[in-house]
Amino acid sequence: MFPRRCPPGGENAAVIYTTTLRGIRKTYEDCSAVRAALQGLGVWFKERDVSMDMGFRQELRELLFVRARYIGGPEEVLRIHEEGGLEKLLDGLPRAQPGHLCDGCCGDRFLPCFRCNGGRKLVALTAAVRCPECNENGLVPCPLCR
Figure 1 (tube, rainbow, N blue to C red):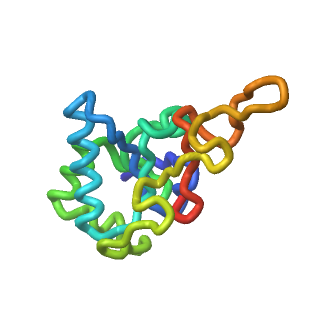
Figure 2: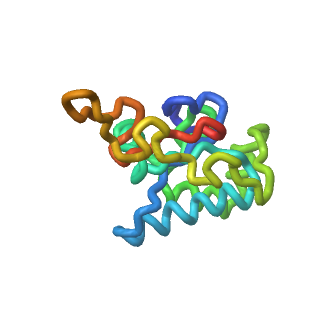
Figure 3: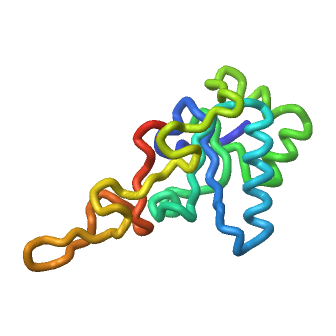
């Protein structure tokens, strides 16, 4: 029923691509609605915020994947949820702990780079070079909850 298309690390997980930027209101609201549906079902999911990391934008295909299967964009996911099918798709996946936030990032899933402190540059003896550890925003994935 759902085509097999696996995002990185999504073999046995729910993966959602979102944005926390509110520049395009409908996109932000769609992402928030799907995130709320997953949270309401209590399932643990990998959220990849494309506004926080260019790498997520490059791997982005659609919105929700479950066990390496593409489920759909916001309209399809919310329709499946309203029809009661989303819980069945998520059955057997790890459950989220209600109210639990990561001790490292408080749920943001990213931290300022430990090497350059988010500045994206390292100063060598003669020149400043781009920090190889962080993304374009000076952030690294949280080592505790990635």
